[in-house]
Amino acid sequence: MELRHLRYFVAVAEERNFTRAAERLHIAQPPLSRQIQQLEEELGVTLFERGSRPLKLTEAGRFCLAHAQQLLAQTAELKAMTQRVGQIERKMSVGFVASTLYGMLPKIIRRFRAEYSEVALSLHEMTTMEQIKALKEGKIDVGFGRIRHEDPNVRRIVLREERLMAALPSEHPLTLAKPTLTLLDLVPETLIIYPKAPRPSYADQVLAAFQDRALTPHKIVEARELQIALGLVAAGEGVSILPSSMLNLRRSDVTYMELNEQNLVSPIIMSMRMRDESPDIKALLNLIYDLYDEENIEYKKELW
Image 1 (cartoon, rainbow, N blue to C red):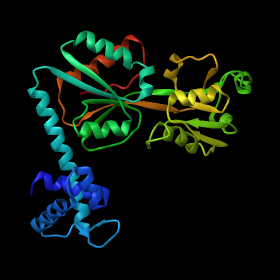
Image 2 (image 1 turned 60 degrees about the vertical axis):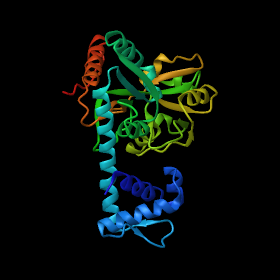
Image 3 (image 1 turned 120 degrees about the horizontal axis):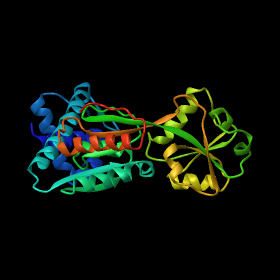
Image 4 (image 1 turned 135 degrees about the vertical axis):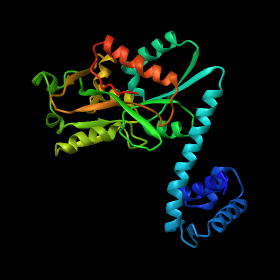
């Protein structure tokens, strides 16, 4: 059994269609069908229920898929780590969600480049889920996101929990009514959430905060990204819930207000491959802790 057999099998299983899988793999369909037949013959089992539309996995196929995905992820991890060890020029690719740019991430990157100039650092904006996929495929080495999602091949360190706040149009009646708000105060308003896709995302964290308190916003509008959400708030289309680091993104037509709610936070999570023992990644983590200490920012410290 070769790795290509597993890659072909996973593609067909995920696409649930031989034609789409062949397009994804950039091969013709007949050779793909033969590869799957060879795999079934070698294993002595049937992996797909023939004749089903879309394709369905047999019980043996489901078992094989789970382990094949894990094995391929480990193979990509091994490749990336071996390449790292063999590189003369040290490189580090960092994925980040857009909202982290308004917090400490720019300062972290500047400090790391100043102290570790021998490491070529590249930045890539991507969602948390895209980061996890990119880590397993060896496309990035570190990710900074906000979604709690467990994966056996990815180590995730919660750096800190960031308080959330409300963003309202300037001169909105609520900005004059009280010094702080609760989510209950926002229920009659149109709630603008972001990003619209892909999901799960920060938008789901905001919606979950309302659901946890048995609250339902009057109306929900989905925006593609943060800047559009803020623009809609400024235009008087509704209110939004933002991480407190967005205070650095001040606008004269938007008022930010504290939310007087317990445990209303969004985590900032650093992700890396589970068995990546790179000294550069360890140095980055320690540098983050040092900066938090300098800025008197409360954080959670995890031993390497």
